[in-house]
Length: 378
Ligand SMILES: *Cc1c(COP(=O)(O)O)cnc(C)c1O
Image 1 (tube, protein in one colour):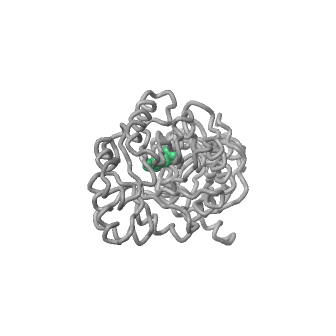
Image 2: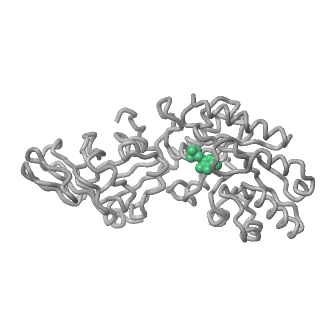
Image 3: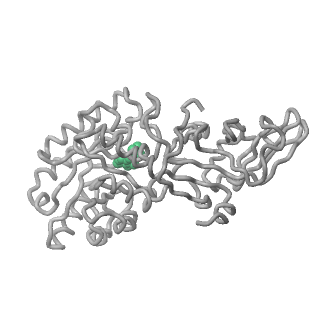
């Protein structure tokens, strides 16, 4: 894109493919000899699956997880022919033929899905690979261990449907000492005993940083590839992948007593300089940041004053000398002074939600180099 594209956009989202690579390598090295997959659902956690998946494939990743079959179909041609694409949400009724045509591998979450895939495989004249997901305690997706046991001992099913992976998902992996982790690991191990020789997968990002006995054959990191902390127990070891800044579109000085923004939820207690920036909740910056979050300029914290609007945010920039901020200057929302995780925390949410809500109005720049490390203290 040209400079004018950048100048017209209210904000700039810089995505470091170099940091993404480094994060994949860090997890792959940590879990080896287990393999590292990549979860690229929700358009690669908002960063563009067609950009991130090929970069991860170039690092040697061959296992890619999406949520929907349509996501698998959209991604297929961007990946090496020997890459495997798994559909986490399962095999939806009526989608069997499309799933076969796409060469996607469904995650079978129920006996009904298993029987439909078995019939589709039979009808196609070829065995069709699948993943079987067991619910080990999260009560979200997956069959009961007893249901999985039914399939394990069913020779017709096993002949029609080679089970290439048995998987489960951890509910509390971001809290390493949570007792549910070990309970789920044991439940999963019991189910796995019914499928001797089948590769196993239990760990997401958080699970990849749990002890080795959680790693099994394949880990499935998502959010930490994109820079978010895998857990809340230690400083974030991941490189920041995302930087976000927004342009100043107006600066004004208001007297003590003046209100700012919808509902006038901020009232100046002294003469105050207010800068308005060109990004708002339509760009994925939650309204919950109103009067709570901040932006940064040259390392100076600029608190959000008043509510977040659809297309703009008002900042108290009194801490900067008058005249410092000019129209078109860019303030940092995610970057060296404010991590993705910190912005999410200020909004009362998680990095996943910030990433997957990033709007489509930003000027997006994909860089090979890495941005400077986020300072955890910010
Ligand atoms: C989303 C998802 C992942 C990735 O989780 P992160 O916490 O982003 O690493 C792994 N496995 C399943 C089943 C998922 O739904």
